[in-house]
Amino acid sequence: MVRLKFIPESLLALMLSACAVGPNYAPPSPATLAVPESYSTPAVPGAVGDGQRWWTSFNDPQLTAIIDLALKQNLDIDQAVARLRQAREALVQSNAGLFPTVRGSTSYSRNINIRGRSFGNITDAGIINENFALSTDASYQVDLFGGVRRGIEASRASQESSAYSVAQVRNSTASEVARNYIIARAAQANLAITRGSLAIQDDNLEIIGFRMQAGLVSSFDTEQTRSQRAQTAAQVPLLEQSFQQAANRLGVLTGQAPGALKAELAATQPIPRGPDSVPVGIPADIIRLRPDVLVAERNLAAATAQIGVAKAQLYPVLSLTTSISTNAGMIDRLTDIITGRVFGSIAQTIFDAGRNRSIVRSRRAAAEGAFAAYKQSVLRALEDVENALTALQTATAREQDLATALDASTNAAVLARSQYRAGLTDITRLNTSESALFTAQNGLSNVRADRAQALVQLYLALGGGWDSANPPSISSLTAPAK
Image (tube, rainbow, N blue to C red):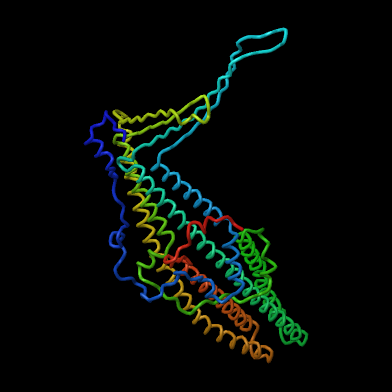
């Protein structure tokens, strides 16, 4: 063993014990995050989101197929996976700091020294000198105060944060596909209602024409009905625009041209219904299931580790260098004589105008900011769940009332139409009843779409399809597409 004569043995033993400076990270407790012990929503076992493909609960094969396609081809997901690959390589680079850097070199030279020359016979005589050389050197910076290990902690936390970010983007993509799919189907449903209402109004105009020829009504009935029909017809372009925009968005979300899915969506399908009830977990489930919350927690861990990286720069740096070399005139004699040396040095910053200590304070401030961001993400997650549940409950209650209103409006419109044909009522009453029926039909269609959107919102608030108990491996997320 080579002993470094210029370092006292007691000091050397202390340095080689290598303690890591900086705070040791521990995830904040729910009490620290101001998460209430009791949640305002029912704590039902089997929280949604844990390993479930929630979009299949709508029992719409086309919706499921489009979301599955988007999860394979969406370009936002591809970007998130690329960032994860970068984070994985950054961890490899950080781990390399625990090991020495070894370099090797080899050389060969040949010298010819001419001793004499005969011009008559043109013969030369000389001495050929060959030299073979091999050398290896290694350098190692001892991680005395754990700066490298804290850097590895930070890189590992950043990698995990990137993995959770992939899950977050996947969840967001699935929910955005579902939202636009619901918009497209709602537009189709309202178009069908509008065109049905136009057909009834055309029929009314025909009846009014017959009654005018018989002298039973004036042109007032015709003009009032024409006005109402025009207002109804004005809704058609807006609904077609809504459908086209939703279909375009679905194309882009699946990594295709905007119009790629229009042909597949052209056939009218009902608005996805979804389950009548959704189990909701306790606040701890929300923190465990939400990828965005897990991203914020891992960012906090990385920021905490960076404090140790900065603090390690305040202490001495021990560097060790060793080299081994040999050379010989013949290659088979290279091992006859081998020379080597070991060198150690200690470097300490004496004056930097407070730069390194300022970096430590800056990293502490960054960690405090990361903690605030983590706490905010938890509270926002709970808020999202509350808002989604409220939206779902509101839509469910409105759906029941609007179903009752539609039933009554349908009966009133049928009665008014039969009375008008019999001459027992005027055109104003008929148009009013027809308008009320059209409004009730649209209202019920829209509230069904609102209920489906609230379900999507709730699924996303509860963590989407992220399986925290069995998360995908880093290698599976970063594997090249086949």
